Length: 236
Image (cartoon, rainbow, N blue to C red; front, side, top):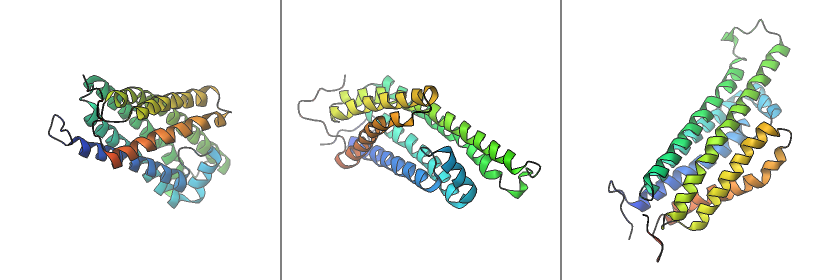
């Protein structure tokens, strides 16, 4: 039997909403990277996408912004689901996620400026092609730095989230452990990108952990819902 939350919502219903939003966030993020070379691409491939395939880049940009919105929806669903376990920690991870989403959305502004350089109405005709290319690469560098900054908050939100999943009594504890490891991996990404920018391959093991943790959580919530385990500890 599915428990009800404080406002009368079914816990299973909220869990499946959060899982669906989380899975949609992951898929739109992949779409943004595939269509517009946004997020994990190199500066060269991103510049080429913006300047030679503007229509696909625009679709990728829309997908990236949509993914940020879906991520916030997923965090809200998880907040509603997990606040009976600990209201303060649930609010903490929701706020950390919201700050990360805001920074991620702000990071798109330099990319929009690069896209607009090709607009005849942008009044940039006084600049040479070399100068415009330099400005474009500078904007792309700003985008990548700001996007990486969002990972600090995206790592931080995973620690209270993982703890609450572990303590919930209606979600498997291994998912909580994976989410905490995911938080460590994202924190390492943030530090590596700023301190060791020439070694991107160091992130690969962490990205594998993140994929397993986040896809695993999304699929579990969407398919299995949130049912109390027999003999599980009840939230305090």
